[in-house]
Image (cartoon, rainbow, N blue to C red):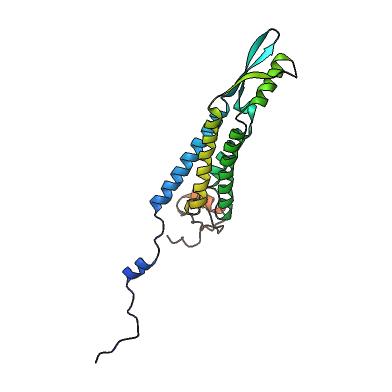
Length: 224
């Protein structure tokens, strides 16, 4: 009659490795960093460039004729361009902080993209900016534009904001595993040991330099 042991068999290294969840690979972390940087920089560039383009056109009546009037994105709303600059700053700051601060900066990056895209879509009409331009051009505060037409640049601006938003979402998801800027150069505050200079007793200049440093040139030679 056989006996069954109640003691579980020892676990092998292979079993332990199979039981533990695999950590994300370094290659995957580097890939997410590269994608976030590309999306954030590209999105901010698109927003800044598209905000300077003509968003709306119209015609203002003046005297017996008409005057064409245009309004670019910055005249319609300056919010997308301002938020794109905030997003660029947050994109750089993500790599300068860590822990909860990195989470907050990543959220700021995402909100910057969301705000830039929403502002572009909400103000895509541009009628108010065109009316203001018509009043300034015709010197008539009651002037209004007619024949209002729109371009695709507000929606290009919104697409740039969406890219910044995606960069922020990547930072929120994977940012905790990203490296910190200059982390390898951080000091722990402890004083570094100072290596004593070798004094040659046959050279008077070495003796004078040792005296200037407050060292005793006649003392025992420092061990290497």
